[in-house]
Length: 322
Image (cartoon, rainbow, N blue to C red):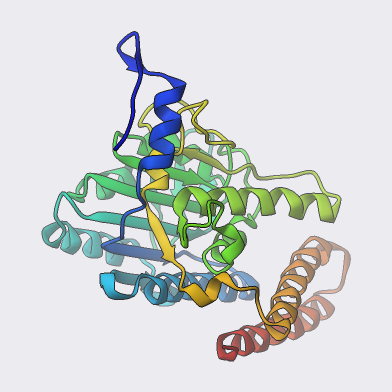
């Protein structure tokens, strides 16, 4: 039972707070993850790896709900393939289904238009909106984890669609770390803030947003990305969704991961060690990227290759660890 209290024809803060608690997170029906053009070896590997990890985390955790997960990466990540995929799904999905679109990679913004970088022609925010709008699902979640992604938020807003962006505007054009922590959120039981054994899109956003802030503090660098969430269909995105600002109710309905009872336990020492090593390697790659201009190209490539190989080995060890 949900208690409500209306004020002036709208919902009061009490109403929002009660709905926040009462609304259950519902299972997903279809998820597509697109890893866009990397442009360099470190980004190609990381984008594809993040996409694969997201797909595996969702497929494993959703279990009996039979969620369908599609990944477009590498040579498959083209505008034509994306169009065809969404056109096909628009014929299969039903209004009551819940669909999720996750975009990983680079975005661009020229002061007027956002574009998602793909192999071949890019897709603009307006073109992507047309693709999302053709999906019949009344409940949609779009997570844009690219640079300059904040410029896409206004174009994609509509009632029934939650939009998450890695940046607050199109002017935050640097490569983003938000997707790394979004992936981590779907694997870390600590992201389950209310301890109901479900990690919702709202909880994943809060986790990734917090980790992104901590990353820049730890690097002693000025933050060049500020993630936003908007799920009312109007107004600006916020960094702190809550009943007070009326954001997060729809995002809380999307159950991205359902934790098994044993996953509520702390990680084994070995898994914690591997996770820490992975985080360290990711940070070393980020630092190397910023040092690139100050070192010989051959030295940069040698160091980058060594880090990427070690990162791949660590990821494999993590996947093999129970």
